[in-house]
Image 1 (cartoon, rainbow, N blue to C red):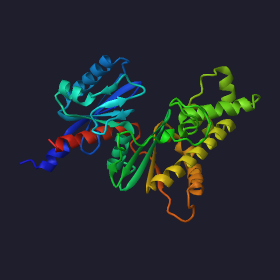
Image 2 (cartoon, one colour):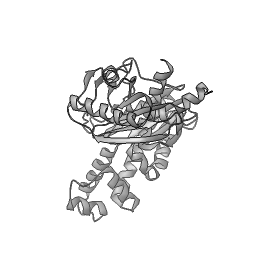
Image 3 (tube, helix red, strand yellow):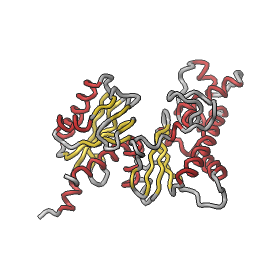
Image 4 (cartoon, rainbow, N blue to C red):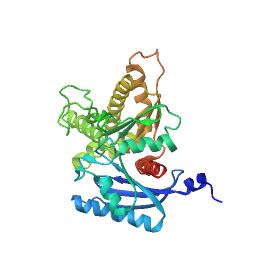
Length: 326
């Protein structure tokens, strides 16, 4: 006779990362293993997006006996995790997506902020395992963040905490799309890395570095990944841009530690793949800038173990909780 524990281990759920460019959905088992994947471009209208999500989950459920669905969304999610209040890259505003999709799919559906989903996956299966108070910093185009307090996701009173990328670190600094100036993500992100490189190139227009030649040939060709690759190849401008990035990462991590006092910080997002170029230097800045430096324990700083799959795996694992409560 099959035990309930064995049954739980065999239960499959679907995690969906609803991004502004693509929808990535996967079937995930109770061990966090991705078993089946589908990906489609993200439609720009709400009806088309709803249909694409239903189709993606239906495609996976036809091939696998799935029991619940979790959506990871980059946006403001209601505290009951049923409604998308606002998502800057998606056409949903105050939409009860959870109940609507559940009705269409015939499966329970839960929503979660993508960074929260990622930290839950890292806590359950990856780099944050064993952490008590954990901050995840997802560095890509901007900065996403999540906070675990004694193993529970902290969402704030309205489900939108913590927006660490928009903490102001430079008064009257670089303008940010959020409407403020000097936000942390304007100095510590893939976008910021490119802007810093462009500023450095403009300061010395006669530079003959790799980046200078590429920038003159195609001014729009620079990306965060390209700057990181040039730094790895010894380009001095790219190396200077990376050093600037490391300094601002250290500044932000010190600020985060002063506020939350975590025992573990996980660096995730696309920029984390270039961690060997900046993380040791960022740790040094963090260690000297934290309040009480030299007189308090420092948080361990790790990079993601689950990579780009973290949000999907976390959403699927959070969906598993729906099954247990039914």
